[in-house]
Length: 115
Image (cartoon, rainbow, N blue to C red; front, side, top):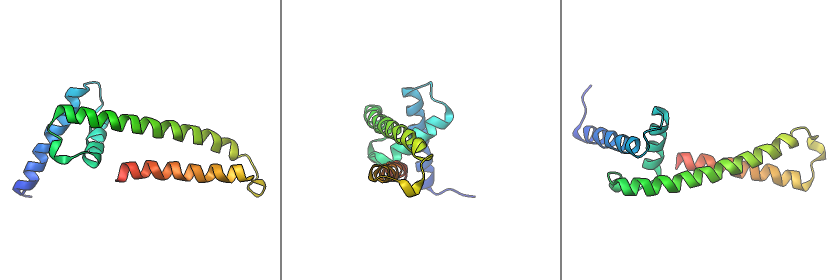
């Protein structure tokens, strides 16, 4: 298998990005380093991923967005747990609205990871 120069350049850029991430937070597990790298390449200006300050700013923004999404998901999950014991034929408009919110939260989370 041979690599083109653009593939090799991409591999070097990815390697540098992962190294920068690890330098910013040496406590990260290997999985988290790759996860952060993936999110950065999905949500950041690819031309600026060699700038540690930029990576730190984008990472902070992503962390805040992920935490907000996780908090929202946890709240909706608690409500869904209580809803699960209810007879669906007796759902109130509030409970239907809860289901709609849960779908929206899940959709936002999936969109965040697949942008």
